[in-house]
Length: 191
Image (cartoon, rainbow, N blue to C red):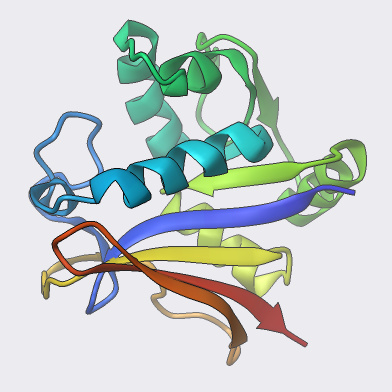
C-alpha cells in the first residue's frame, strides 16, 4: 500500500508561498535565498527518487509542467520529475500535457484512497496547499516533511490555514541541513 508523503518548504511562521511568487521553479522565491547545502540537496533528491508517483493540485501542477520539461541536471532530479507518474486533482484542468499525467476527478478522498491501494511506494505531494488541507482533513497524510527556513515571511499562503479539527503530529525525525539554519522536521499524524 502506498504512503502519502507531503513535503513542503515553509517559513517559521508557516508560509509556503509568499505574495511575491514563492514556490516558482525559478530561483526567486524566499526559500531559495537559503543554502540547503549538500545534505539538503541529497534529502530532496533521495525523497524524489524514493517516490513512485506525485500527487499535485492544479496550481502546483501548472507551475511544474511549465518548467520541468525544460530543466536538465546531472543528478537525475529532472529526469525523475519528468518521467514519473503524476496525478492531478483539479476540477478545471482539461488537457494535462506533461508526460505521464493522470487526472483525478470526483471525490478526492475516495480517489486518493484508491491511488494508495494501487501504489506500492511513496505518493509525494509538493506545494498544492488546497490539496494538502483536504488530505489532512480526510486523514490521508501518512508523513509530513517540513523543510523549515529561518525566516518570518508574514503575508502569504500559510500551509495550515483553517481546518475542521485539531490535528496532532508525532515528530519522527529532525535534522539541520545546510549552513543557513534550515531544519527538516518529519512528522506522522497521530490518531
